[in-house]
Image (cartoon, rainbow, N blue to C red; front, top):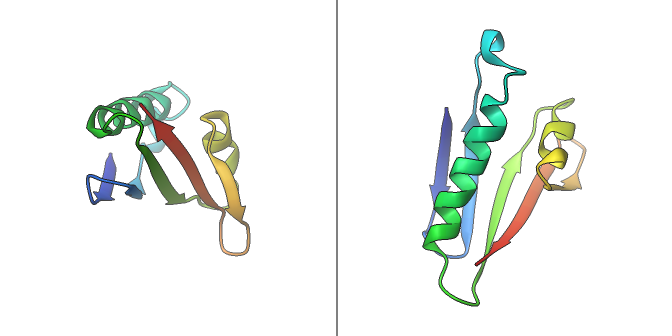
Length: 86
């Protein structure tokens, strides 16, 4: 499950992202992220960029880094972001 907050413009925030423990390590999280990114990308106008922000639980940053998210801060769990463009 992924809950998104967004203005259908420049910013999207991944509020919740949960894959049940018994379904983890089966590519479901990766597929959910890619599906979401494809939807967000479909809302982007030509020559526009969109920023996706999220806060990763400590120890889960590697999952997002594999999906090309960048670490912003590590004090309370990494703030992560990724820029998409059409």
